[in-house]
Image (cartoon, rainbow, N blue to C red; front, side, top):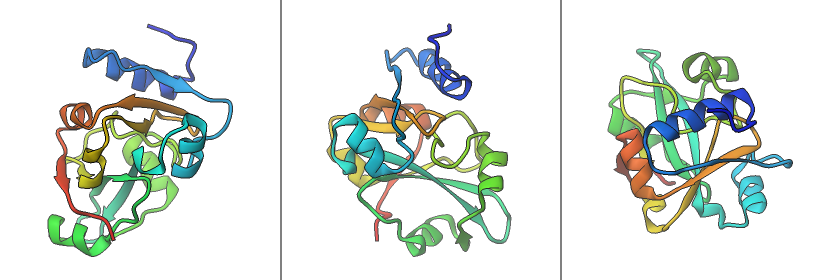
Length: 160
């Protein structure tokens, strides 16, 4: 199945197709790298952007995926309480190594970590949300329920 998408975006489209939810990856000419840029390109609220952040556990070195509302800053102390270990923001090389996606296009799917993603409870208030689809200018629309189903993530309070 090839929709003329860039290879990283096509990988995400293929994964979405496997879930049989009818979700389509959309590519924009303009960048959707930040939550603000994505919201402007899509025409939605910044809060509807499901930004995927990767943190590194300091002791074990294992990655943790956080899916936060684009309007929120993440409270790292809350994450530490949930995962039971100090965390830090990794460099771009670490994110690429563990997800195979570059920062600015990291989707909430397409890779497996030991722990399931932590999902910002604020995303649950929207009927539709938007997530990166593997490139700095591709996204896909889904419901919060779809996000939970696809990622098997845990809804938590993580905003600062």
